[in-house]
Amino acid sequence: MRPSDECYTPNWLVDLAELELDGIDTDPCWAEGSHVRAAWQYDREADGLVRGWVGGVWLNPPYSNVGPWLSKAVRVSSEGCRVVALVKADPSVGWWNRYVWPKADAVGFLRKRVAFDGAYAKGRGANFASAVVGYGCELRAFASVAHVVRL
Image 1: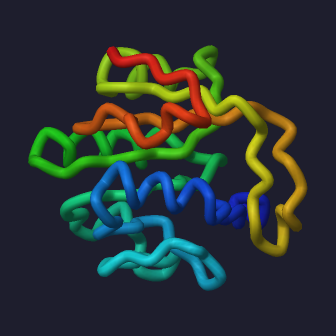
Image 2: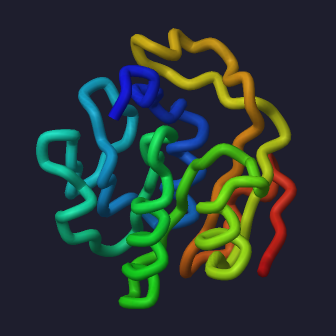
């Protein structure tokens, strides 16, 4: 994980994820300073890729290596978890075409750029568009801030 991956989800997105998931049970990419409140919070040392994910999962993966995280999101959703992932809105990359279009239940393209929190992000708006991806959920809670496509 690179220092630039230390970009935390702003409160307004956490609030919508909590609504969508009826509370967040697991955050496999949690970090000190995160606004996410989950029963299971795995930081970098705990390695959320090797830990179990349960219930409603909020996933803001390291953008330097999204593929393995979405691969696991697909797998755990087939086992009953509901996952909402925040990713770059970039359908030109391989991980998008492997794990988003053919596997997700819904994609929500956010109408504004996300101003991430954290030391690296410093609350500045991202220089890219973002999307939320739903596995096992329809992203209804995000309809006011995103153009949601159900797949």
